[in-house]
Length: 132
Image (cartoon, rainbow, N blue to C red; front, side, top):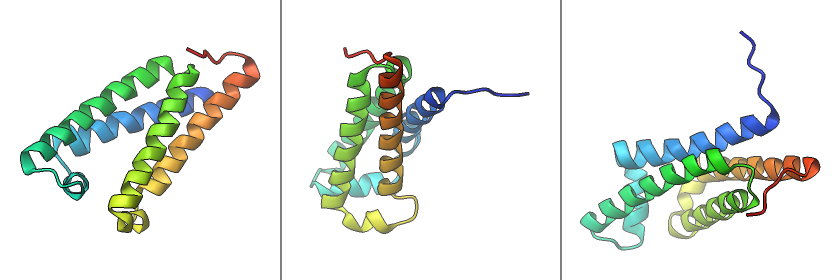
C-alpha cells in the first residue's frame, strides 16, 4: 500500500499529533514528573499545580484539534510558533537544565516551529494561506 502524503499534510499531521500527544499523555492520562516540576517552579500548591497541568492538557488537545482543521490559516501557524517559542523560554527560565536532557524541548519545539514555517511558505507559494 502506497501512502502519498504531501509536505503540507506531513507537517499538518506532525504538528497536530504533537499537540494532541503532549496534551493527552503527560498531562491528562498521567501527570508526568517533569510537568509537576515545571508547575512547582512557579510556586503553585499541589492542588493548583494539578489543575493548571490538567487545564494545559485540555488546552493542548483543543489546539491540536483546531490546528488539524485550520492548518491553512496564518493565525494558527503564528500561534503555533509563538506558543512553542514561549514554552521554550518558559523552560529555559524556570528549569534550564532540561534543555540539555535527551528528547528536550529544544529539539521538539524548534522542529515544530520549522514545520509551521514550511506550511506558511508552502501556502504563500500557492497563495492558499488564509489570513483570518
